Length: 272
Image (cartoon, rainbow, N blue to C red; front, side, top):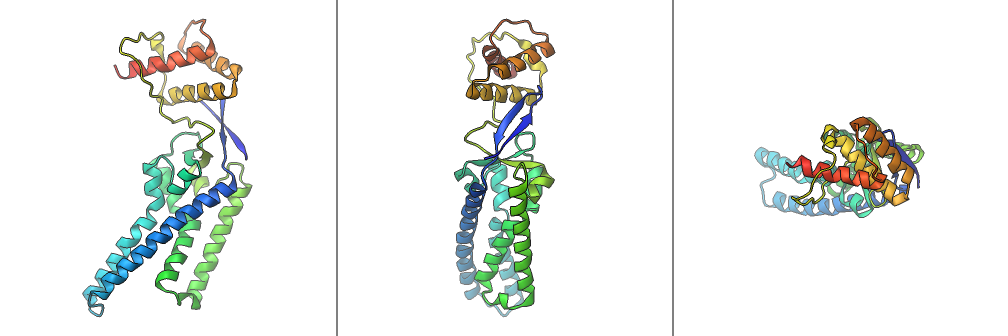
């Protein structure tokens, strides 16, 4: 399992684990299996509608084409809709403990998800082949469909080679969208929420914290959690000193306590 280091705003690297290839493959197979069963159900619905309509009229053919397109939309939009609404995860990725993030370790933007989806060539080609096999089982006897298979295999092999050989495990869509796939159960994303419950009677110690950006606050939280997991006092101390110098704070608190107080102060002051 490879580990990449992403620099934060305070020049301190936070580690993220890149999922093993088998995890990505199993997640992909889970998603394809879901799409396959949906296509089978959609096919039965389509056949039922087609058998109950007058197929030979021009209007009926146009209507059936529209119905077929509508039934296929969930398959075509499966990944982009789930990744946007499930914080970078599809069903397969969630089961296998993975998430799409941007190259800074934060939540990917909608435009980045869109680029990944538009260049999601490998599994879209697989879904297309499954679709053709279900609705047109004899189509592969033609030259055109043979070329489709060869193109699908070429894209699939290209993605596999890139994922295996790339340090960040990026495929074509990830490289152009500037996204990476990381494990979710061992490292904390920089963009995970910083929300904490703070009592109304709480007295903030460092109001200067509000001079930092949201990205800085998320970086502080990520550094604190990583330092705690690794027992890395130096990481917490380095971050504390940089923050004190930047905000002109004089404090003798321990680095861990100081960072925790900063996050509490932010949570209290940001809602006032």
